[in-house]
Image 1 (cartoon, rainbow, N blue to C red):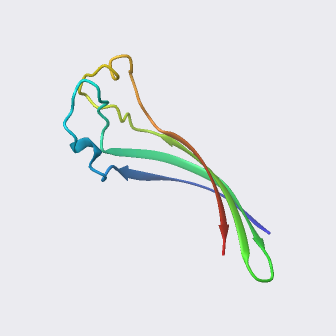
Image 2 (cartoon, one colour):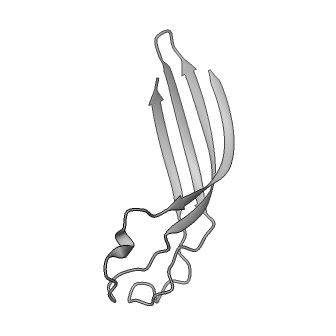
Length: 92
């Protein structure tokens, strides 16, 4: 068994083109970039024929991703950032 704790940061970019849809008052404007600080904990279990790994990752968005275009949905918001918890199970 092997355990590790790690942290890091990573940038994110929206490339799907969802913001290319014509804006109306019923949409929420979101910026195309984001930066998150991520930390995690993982364990590796070694078996005779395979390795089983488990990870849990916590990510906190550092950038306000709320766009500047006013809409019905963005008016009550002051800030919008991402918070993520992810669990991974890996068989190798």
